[in-house]
Length: 314
Image (cartoon, rainbow, N blue to C red; front, side, top):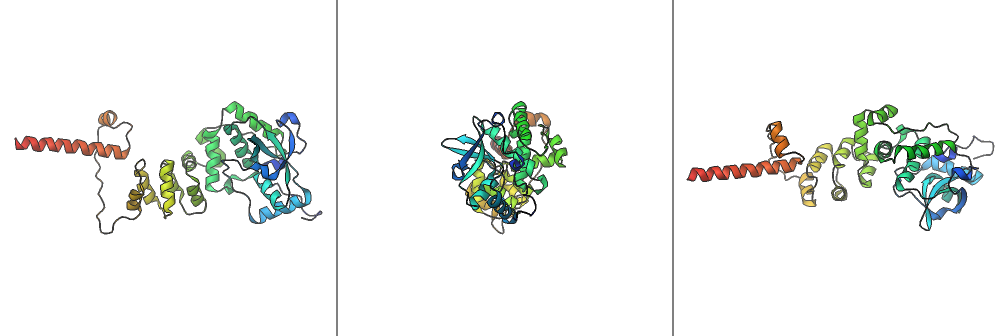
């Protein structure tokens, strides 16, 4: 980037923060830390910049250095990044060995996650986020945040040390969050389900290898069963995903193989709907999964017909 070229772009949330932040506002104040001593946040849901955006950032850092500090928290013998993953990555590309940092101590994982989510939301356009990134933001806004009072304290701190004039976000209901992002409450719920997926499925969703509706169905599987499905690395449409979800809790590799590759020529089982009075539903089936209900009905029918046959013989 030339000296008389356009001003440096705002690359990350804290690029909008001043470098001379008072120590009282930043925990332990500014420090110069070895770049390699800072590990990525353990549950970082956002992808790093690539291509031209990364190249611009590297060029700017080579010319001007890292103008604004990253935010980290002390963890063990090193540090964990809260805000500034892209600046750290670009600094490495630019050949820097140290980076200015605001060090936070004594943060819980929930408090740290607020920094990670909110500083990224300041900088990024929600509509430009990948589906799994939207899921992380929406889920954090609705259910993953800490108590509202402490969360607002953190947001107020971010606002005070920044120059963007970003409004502090309030914790809202699902429909309230939907209004903020132009989404229905139902769609918010879908994205919140997606946040429960393991990383391989989130990656497939982001790259178009999995539809949102199929992803929602798979999100109901326990993590160990999601791993079984992910290892298969097979194309999964919405219909297959629904069948896989129906086996949740009892899914095995063999069962998955039957779902994905049914034996040709075998007649599919026909489902028959049977109406059950509400009082019987509440008395006998409350809290049961679909398969558990089916198994109970089958056992009851077997017992009834076995008794009937015995009576007929007598």
